[in-house]
Length: 147
Image (cartoon, rainbow, N blue to C red; front, side, top):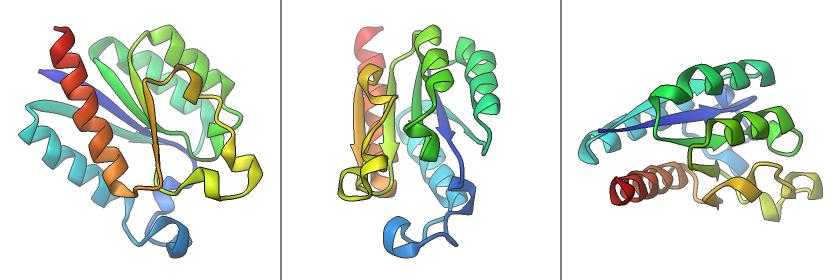
């Protein structure tokens, strides 16, 4: 069975209250539940984690990646500056998909840069919750093909 870590960065715990024009009205709990439901149909497991603190995200990657096969990450505002997260992702040597609820390329210039994307197997943005679900589906298929 494939094990996927789902990591959400700063302010994503505030989904549902945060700018609905940009992020919609869905909550992080609803996203996590949809991922868990989808993982059952894909015969996989997901472990969801969220933190507003870069070091906690690094600690989670370092401590949890040994039991995982892949990662879905929405770095939130750390996407542009989270070099320590990038290092942890590179060090764990797991394939990862970068996901964003909004289309970061249609937003402010500073949001259009990602330090995580160059090492990701893919980036999905602007598709809301579907980006997470597509990322999960892709990772599970990719990992099943490689085993």
